[in-house]
Amino acid sequence: MTDTLAAERFTGSFTQQEPIPEVGIEAALEVLRHGRLHRYNTAAGETAETALLEQEFAAFTGARYCVAVASGGYALGCALRALEVQPGEKVLTNAFTLAPVPGAIAAVGAVPVFVGVTEDLVIDLDDLAAKLPQARVLMLSHMRGHLCDMDRLMALCDAAGVQVIEDCAHTMGASWNGTPSGRHGAIGCYSTQTYKHMNSGEGGFLVTDDEDLAARAVMLSGSYMLYERHLAAPGPEVFERVKYVTPNVSGRMDNLRAALLRPQLADLPTQIARWNDRYRVVEDGLRGTPGLTVIARPAAERFVGSSIQALLLDWTPEAIQEVLARCAARGVELKWFGGRAPVAFTSRYDSWRYAPSEPIPATDRILTGILDMRLPLTFSLEDCALIARIIRAEVSAVYQQAA
Image (cartoon, rainbow, N blue to C red; front, side):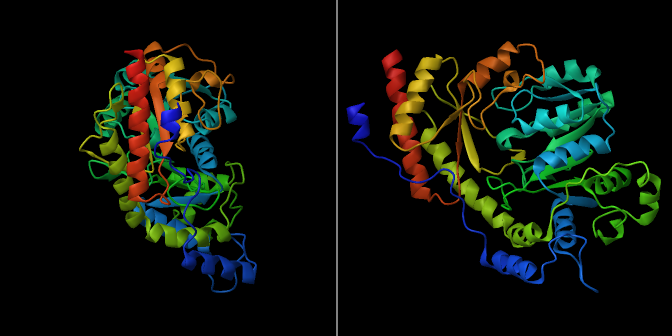
């Protein structure tokens, strides 16, 4: 360990994001100056920042309708309610995901049914096909930005009459065969929490082409009878069908957060290119590391590389923990999905005791080997090359010890 500590060390922060763009700060200050933070509190002739953001995000994704909400987790719960998922109903979802996904299912009284994961870190479509008869809704998590074969998935779900909610918290701006993430299923949900692709602290979106789902989502979000102030919503005749039978489960976005997000949305394509540049540097630096599997990215997938994952398949937990410790000693923070107890964001399907599950041995093998690392845009390309060298060196050292 002494020789390792004397080697190169990374000194950056894995949680420090870039500052909000100045134009966003100025727009937010303008909202603070006039005080109309609530999305429906507008002056005569004024269009709310939130309504404009919804219109712009709908255009960005190609969706007919968009609702801006308080968080990505709220968007997921709102989607389930819009699809009228009932207490006790089973909802399919990935075994490899984060807690807000099964949490949203459990929060409406439904029961998560976990589907396995492949070595490409996407939902196992064979396991999905076997489990489709159990449910009418799939909440598909594009976990850590990995898109499965969406053409095959949608063919399976359409044939089974299963509606798909896409959790796009990690795939805002990604696509499969040219179709944007969130636009394959009935509803797409996105997050603008600080560690996502746009930063408003908390926030999210729901998009859909279905006018009834959109109207329900607007009513659910807490529009009262002010739905006509939405620019990316269906017409008043659609709301007539749902406004008296849809509960208010308030979770609106406010104008302050919308003001922060509008310039970030305009700049998102540039930011995606920057993330992917960093991802490729780390990916290239890790290729060929003994004992480490780099995740293949299909040609059909346009991804957003704001984090990177690799596998230490069939390593002992003790050996993986040594890799984590050695990398941490050199300033590189790796998250691990193999721990039996939840740590920060790295919980797993068998951690959520409110959602009973049966073991999925093939998936457990993969989860045990997953290393996960953020790639914030505050890292330079040189930083990314250094990080890759450190991981490569420490994985190689532990691998050679075990050989």
